[in-house]
Picture (spheres, rainbow, N blue to C red):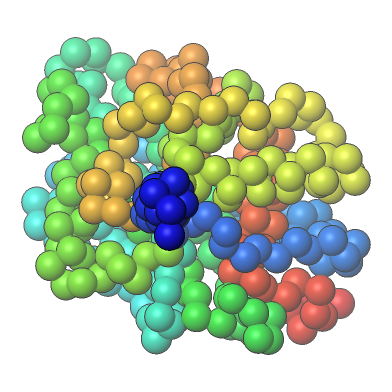
Length: 340
């Protein structure tokens, strides 16, 4: 072998090694693409009931939910009850804070984790007005509860036969203690997430997570998203495609015309500090669905129920249901779960 050919082979080997090491778990992941009219009608218009969304899921959360307070406990109990009513396996990571998590089928090898934080920031010593934190993060948690309820029948029917979804289950995590009590630091923030990530690392549970999808700051008309991580950009682009398809085929409300999932990217900026950080640092792929830039009501007393946009929430929920259904290879085209 000539010296030039030997050098070329070595360079090629180095390049292939680097590429294989740089490939993340979320790249090249198979996704369904549901296009049948009946299936999309079912997942969008057929599952929409904003009155039930408010009364069953959101309204009980629209209170101050400061960690360690009785109101925080009542909201946690509301979450736990909703998940137990569905028959999911509910557990709690309890220390100074309580982080409930519910798994649809614990026997599956892998899980897609949907997460939010249910506590609200404590402004009592700085402002004498009540701080609800509707977008931060009552609405995201209510969306997760509704998503679980609406997709529960499809999840029980199981994924499309011989698909990549056969090993997957859905797990919902509701973090407590996300908000800092004083100023956001590495030790005064994301208490529940840091504790659960460390616990699952000790118990070798992190390897079961295919991706963590964290929702935050959702609900006002100025809610917009960008793709934060290259490792889950494929999933984010799928959300963009779902939104475009639903919008172009009249599966959304038609009353919120601005794009929700923008084509903007935030790679290389280190991401936004949130509950996903302890998991990201331990190698978990993260899709961070946090409105960027932050909505104008963020950390303002105006972050309450009166400033929510039901059309935005409805459109996001429809897009998210189709996305999760595709992610888990569910079969909404089958009539078994549809109302007749």
